[in-house]
Length: 161
Image (cartoon, rainbow, N blue to C red; front, side, top):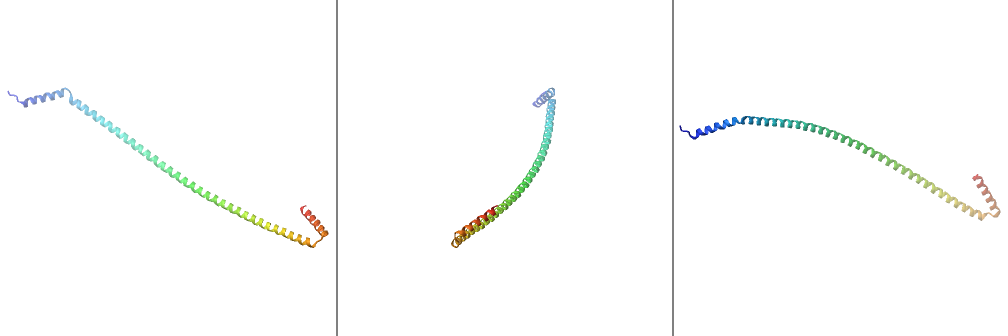
């Protein structure tokens, strides 16, 4: 019988297949594929868990952000109210200060007017006394002067007491 190359290729192929089955290569490949599938399944579960955790963290941070925004808004509102109150208080104090200064100025003006009137009166009295003294000195002699002086002294004493 004449064996050609095809026959020997076929026999080599059968020996190869038998060798693979004998060495349990298909079982090892199945086990490897099962292990790889299990690893992929575990990785998918881990990815799902991480995704859920990330969504939970995202929701928590969004809640915290909303709370912070609300707190910031309330702080701004309080600050605006305080600023408005401070502005009103400053305006009120300024108005009170201006009113006090005006009253003080008016009081000083009235005092100055009173002082001026008193100074004019005093000057007029001094002038009148000097004129009266001159007129009396020209018209009155020594005995009349003594009587007038004593009467004036008595009048001043009576007013002082």
